[in-house]
Length: 277
Ligand code: C2E
Ligand code: CA
Ligand code: CA
Ligand code: CA
Image 1 (tube, helix red, strand yellow):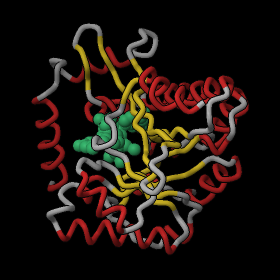
Image 2 (spheres, helix red, strand yellow):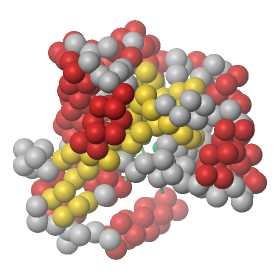
Image 3 (tube, helix red, strand yellow):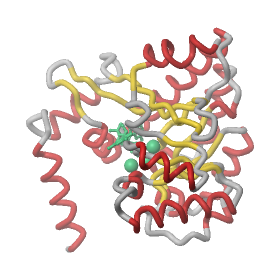
């Protein structure tokens, strides 16, 4: 009953800024979003805090509906998950990311990586690794240029997670844990699973310059990642003070509005790729 109350509250909050009059209508429009070319991907750079270099981008889905305008992924991703549409949408995002990597490779641009968000449902597909392998072969891209971001809870709630992650590692792609620290799970999976990167959830970065507890948690996650030989990325970095703290803690990479918002591919090609060719 407690859970239901919370769900209702969240649902209510979402409704408040919904541009669609109801979810059923949103769902029917989302169903046609791919064929109508309404989906795009924005890219957010991840900055190396030591060198200042940018060698990776997170792919973030954007939906601009002709009739109702821009819809946040916070609204349509949960709907896509509930309705099962996330399979098709997630597949489209992976395909687009691979196409983009292929384009850069063909143009002779310096090697960069794209991190794609994977929904729990996608990750639970038995043939998920096969699908990834097919796309990598289809576009002939370097496997390590593709990263999959999987949330802690998606990893820990699946029985065959270890098998799946090993299959993905065999392909040679990079695996990161998204929203780390928010999953209510034990830490024991960190030693079992072949994880490359931990992404510190933005809730711990927010106010870390004034909130000692958040700073302590972020610092601890950074140390933990380092002792386990994993890379660490701080998410949601908005202030220079936060950058300072993260640098002092030897966090390798950061991502957030302080450096750049997620931007359309044209902006990436202009500012990060062309200049360094
Ligand atoms: P996420 O994976 O945790 O992505 C980070 C979110 O934080 C993004 O929101 C990003 O735009 C936002 N962000 C980045 N820097 C900052 C900052 O400095 N401050 C603040 N306040 N926010 C920042 P966005 O793009 O609205 O995406 C929301 C969520 O939707 C994502 O959270 C992810 O869970 C989901 N999502 C987005 N694209 C996809 C996708 O292609 N597939 C799946 N399955 N989920 C996606
Ligand atoms: Ca993410
Ligand atoms: Ca995240
Ligand atoms: Ca999140």
